[in-house]
Length: 347
Image (cartoon, rainbow, N blue to C red; front, side, top):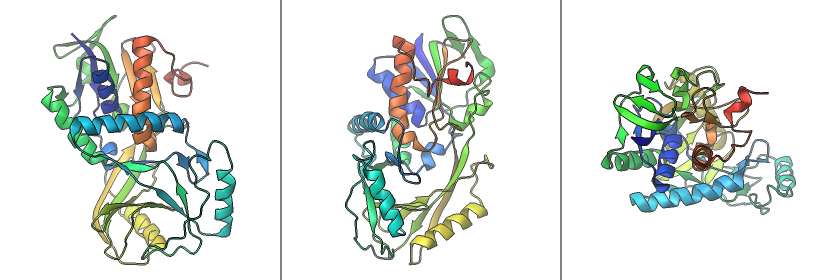
C-alpha cells in the first residue's frame, strides 16, 4: 500500500511529489511526457502583472515558498535551476513612466517596483524613456528542472514513464487500485491533459497556447530580462529565449507560421539588430478563466484529488499550491474558496 499515486510529472506533479517526500509519505508518479507546457515555459517568476500594474494574487506567500522550494531542490539535485535576475519593463512614453510611479505608490506593489528609472543603454535596444525595474524576479530553467527531477525519481524507482489508463482505476471507499497498486489517494496533475480525465473533465480548464523562440543575436548584450510586448530572457553566449504568444483557440502543441510571424514582428519592435531563430516551440498552458488554480477533491470520490490550472505562473504557484493541497488532504485545512474546485459545483 502506498500513500499516493500522482498522475503527471510537470511542475504541479513534481511540487506535490516533493511535498510528499518532505512529509515522509510514499508515492508512485505516472507521466508519459504528453504534456509539454512546463518544459517549454519561459519559467519567469514575477510578482507584478505588468500589463495592468497590479500585484499577482498572493505574490508574497508564493515567492517565499517557491524560493525555499527551489533552493532545497538545487541542494538535493546538485544543479542550479533558479536564476535570480531583474526584469526591466521598457517604457515607451512619459505617460508609461507616470503610470509606473503611480503603481509604485500602492502599498501592495511598493516592495516590488523600484522608483528609480533605469537609463542604462543596451546595445541594439533603443530606450529613450528608460526602464522600470521589477524586484524579486528571475527564472527557473524548467527543462533542466524536469530532467533533473525525473532522473532523481527514476533513481528512487518512483517514476513510471507510461500513460495512465483511467479505465483501469478502481475507486473504493478508502483506497484506489491501479494495475496491482493499492493507494490511499490519487492526485491528478495532468495540466491540459485533464480533458481526457473522466473524473475532472467537467471543470472549466480552457488551455492557452503559447509559442516561444530561442534566438541568437550576436549584437545584443543583456544581463537582465526585458519585458515589453514579449519578454527577452538572456541564456548566455548571445542566445535568448523570447515569448510568448497567446492563442485561445488552437489547443495543439505544434508551432505555427502565424505564431512565428507574430513573434518576429514583436521582436523587431524592440531590437534593432539581426537575429537568427534557433528553436521555435509551442505548448498549451493549463489556464482557467478566473485565473485561479483548480485544487480539491472529487465530489463523490473522497480519495480522488486534483492539482491543476496553474496557468502562466506555474513556477510561482506550484510549490504553494502543493502545500495547500497536502494540508487539505492530510490535515483537513480548508482550501481558499478562490482555488477550491467547489466554486464550480456549489453556490
